[in-house]
Length: 483
Ligand code: GLN
Image 1 (cartoon, helix red, strand yellow):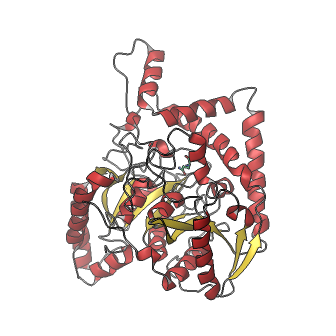
Image 2: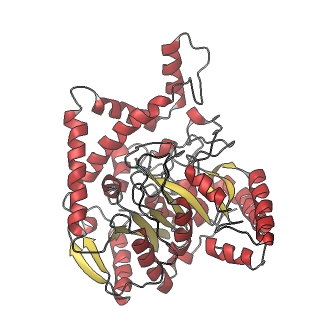
Image 3: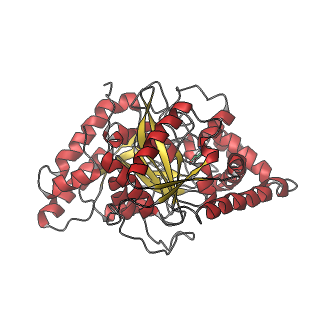
């Protein structure tokens, strides 16, 4: 089995292996398995080895940072200076970012090594990674199935041991849902915790970056690097960032955990419900006080999200016009032709669908009926959570209604695809932190459990997940790979 982030860090500190050695191991695994899995859009071998050599020099001098020499991967929507940043879109296929996203700069500051840029749904729109210009990603547990999306390349890379940790972004579930479907741990922090500077925007009021890794302990370390106030992001929070690692190991005796009845209702695969029940039993044995709660407006979350997210994306994606960034059509006859054909040829079908629906929802005459109404519902969804958190410390449920489905099974039915996010999307509307951790299998495919925390309580989430992972080993299971 491949190593975790903390294990690598300890191994490097003790001189068990060098960063160059471990980086070469990962690059070799990527070369071997990526042709089947398609987790990476770009592999940055040369950068990785140069960073690894620099890390080994720093380790030798004794001035290592928290992640010095640890190889990691970034979702291909974080801008990386001098490296292609495609957002899995044809329109950015030739885009070399001229600067680093704050998240990427933070990883550099702390000494991490970049293995490459991971595959995703185009502009982070999707739940299966099938909307990538670079093709689908295969789920390492069963390559005929999707890894989830939109951060499917990052989740699959960690599951397959092609990286010990990776970054992702979550607008409606894109960290938690692929983490669940690939059997890894992933956390979406509170809106504002992680800087969005240099993270290509989808729905700006919903987007948050976060890490994937095997364990909560590893996620704590990665989230530490990612978090913090950034003056270059106007919605960045000034809340102090606690020491996430130090918060682990507090135990969960007496912790009040709420089970929303709406998350265990129709639409949930009964076999997933049974796996979650077993995990709840484990938490109860650890001393958790399990309570029934209600989030009555849950059913409004999907329609609300798809109005807000599409409205915001139609505005955010207006900047891709064939003039300033990326793809430009051949031989335009005039400016309008240049815009139309560059966008028409550069964007994929799902992105176009969303730009059109979003533009419609924002247009004069419809704004009040759709966008304004969605903002009102968003407030009701947020109020449900605030009410629930007067009675409980954390909320628990399944991350997804089904395990990973077959590639192609839902591509002709966008609404069924959108329903995959039924349990994850409301957190983004409310701005709350949430995480997914592996708790078992159905049909040989991983099941994820979601934990939801109150604002800025990432430490509480990580501690609860860590407590569970101390007494179970689902997070340590690894798929057998087909070479
Ligand atoms: N599946 C959702 C969507 O398609 C969420 C994606 C995301 O979180 N980026 O919008």
